[in-house]
Image (cartoon, rainbow, N blue to C red; front, side, top):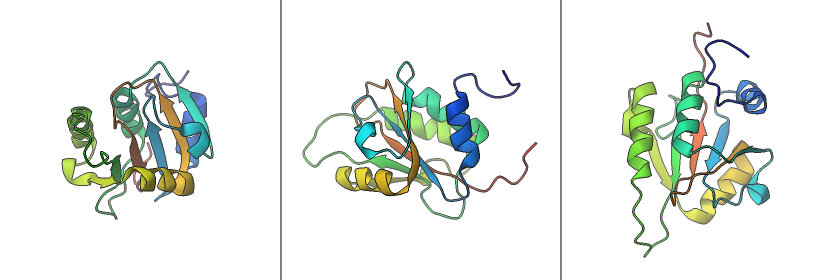
Length: 147
């Protein structure tokens, strides 16, 4: 056990976050995300939702300030009428840790999201999130002051 580390962050996830360098990416998938087929490394966090995982990660990992959109959401499939209130929750969480707030966010078409995860994400965190379109990619920034 360590002090100051959110308890939700497992040793396996902490290792991945620590090994990531500036510009590396990690994907948090909802309960429907095909993580097993799109992950180099799959980390299971089935009992947790994406918002609590996102919050814990941002407590220890900065977002990349050298890109316009270090946070990417999976866009809805055209014609899909599902609501995505979880995106507002993500924006509130990110705003606590990055002064750019919702300007950090971009969107990626569904299949391109899968491709990007396969090609660029160091790991996929598989959550138990039941909200639809709750998948998110985070690009790690530079740690300036590691205490």
